[in-house]
Length: 174
Image (tube, rainbow, N blue to C red; front, side, top):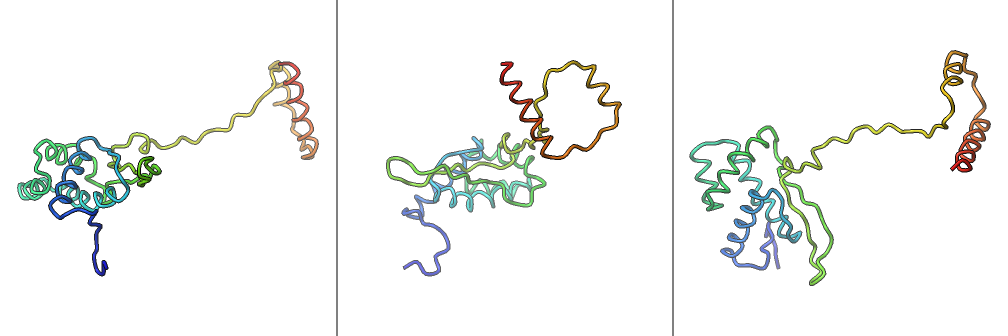
C-alpha cells in the first residue's frame, strides 16, 4: 500500500531516481524543452521548479544549494543567467507539460516538458484577424456614388438572395 506517500517513486531506488531527475533537470535547463514520459515529466516539474525559484536570488548560498542538486557548472550558469533573467517577474509556474499521446512500443504516455518563457510559439499573442469578405470586381465609380447616397435598410432575405446571386456570378466568371 502507498498510504501517505506523496510523490511518485518511478519504480527506482532513491539514488537512481535522484540521479535521473538531476540529469533531466540539466537537459531541461540547457535545451529548454525535453520529451519524456508523463510520469517523469510530472516528477521533474516538482524537482526543477524550486531550483528555478532559488535561481531568482543570485547569491553564493543559492548557487551552492542548486549546485548540490544539479552538479553541472554549465547548467548552473544557464540557470542563473538566461533562465533567471526571463523568469524574474514570474511568481511561479515556470514549466509547462504538453501531452503528446502514447508511445508505440509500450503505450506509455509521452509528454513535452518545457520552460514557459522560452517557447516562442506560445509567447506570440495572436493578432485579431479581420474577417475578409469577398467582393466582386466592379468598377470603382459606382462604389463612390453609392458611398455618397443615403443607405436604405434592405430586408435580410433580400440581402441573402443578393449575396447568393453574386457568388453564383463569380462562379460562372471563373
